Image 1 (cartoon, rainbow, N blue to C red):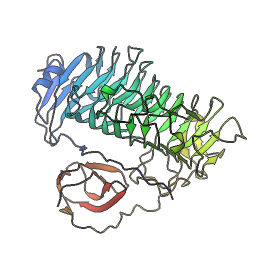
Image 2: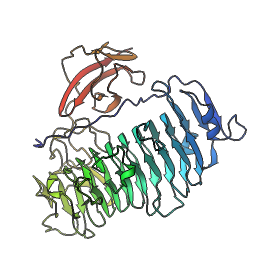
Image 3: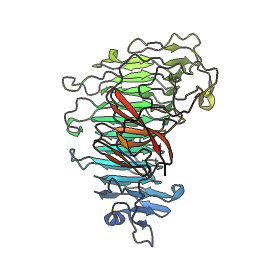
Image 4: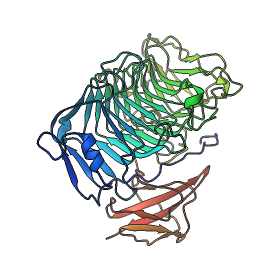
Length: 496
């Protein structure tokens, strides 16, 4: 069992899978259509509308302000199928200021000279942009070499970035750069050949989950968990951390100078990832905001249940900078394997590892072909510490067992798919439910609905008493409420 006390996790507000069931109209964009530009269509859009591009190339440099749907009727901006709509050039492809309840999907952005896409709060820190879902898009081939990002997010709360590709970014920039963003999921994306970072989370960013992504030569720092931000740009103002309460789970890292960097961050958990042949370090622990009289020193990071395969390119496993509290880090139950040194004595770490496995062959299928699934004889199978969040899934969207395997891939055999038997208190009704679910009192903390395999399918926002279930098929589900370290669950049957 994991002996640590788990950090609080904020599960995201409700982002419906079927967001536009009440769509009013489709506004077509392209030559000969009622709207020749996205900006024209955005001016006319109403909650529930879909702004549909024709196939073809469109010029970047667009600015769209206050494009907002509603919680029941999101606005969708959609490219043609098979990513046949490309937004080319411009300083930015599109800058969205103060969007809300917005879906962006099936678009390709390339050859911008500034940032690929900007989403921001317009500098109004008290009123963030919120509820944005970007899915199935490609961000690529920046026409810039400086601190330019494929996707720049400033003051965005409650968002998802899923099934996107980020590749060939600027040498000095990031794939995704977040400044003061909160309550987000970045899942199942592909990052390749990037500059400084694949993902950077800084400026007061908090409660972000980075799940099941692939990082292939993802930059100098694959994931930069923190950074260095001017005090005027922190959201919220006065935050004494660059980033806090982040989860990095089930990801695959191949290459990068350092796949993981903790930089001025607090309570960042890096669990159950697979890391292969980093170029110099496995992780870095740094404090780039050196005024620790205000900014707390980086501390309380976790590096647990990770499978790490290195070779002679490794300089040292952990690079530790000044003004850090690296001794506060929890390092536990990782499996370390050196391909080139059979008698390797193990990694240099910021604190003594608890129950680590050193120079143990993980027995993956074929690392030379980048196949890291575990063979049935692998010593990593079910050798990890029990997870602090049982809703986490492995790289292949399979539930982790208890205890889980070490690394991003669960190799154990699930013996039962029985739905948990839990006493229903009557708090949620009706049960069975059909299209709506109610709660007797407003939800005090975030909750999640998971299916019979433990996969999250709907997030329930606090303060609400009613949620729409139209996106979920008939079946058995589990509602789990979390408040700090406390958790309670209720079964739910959807039947129509």
